[in-house]
Length: 141
Image (cartoon, rainbow, N blue to C red; front, side):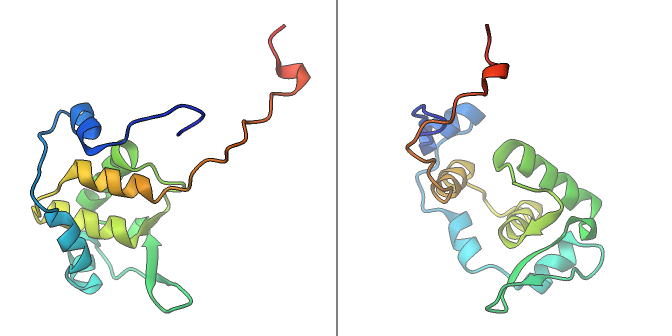
């Protein structure tokens, strides 16, 4: 449910939207995401300079500044952000996006439908309450 409407985010629907063929084999991208090269190796390819990772309280890398991306990696990040997974902000590169850009640049088989379907499942569900009506001075008369 999104903004009060049921929207089908199944792999088949996403494939149909992007005009891609279905891939019924186990997700090679998911395997890659779980067992990817080190972040140092990834950053050597996608960054022009060593990025300063923001660390979590568990000392795990979370994100780095987008200004450290190479021109090509920055363009891929823009494409991914505009067409696949819109971010809440664009000034930082989250770890998962850095890994995804590395996968794209190194020709790792990328199952777009499964990736989008799985990432959509991680979004918080909207509240069951309807949105407040607009103020009286903003309503059509």
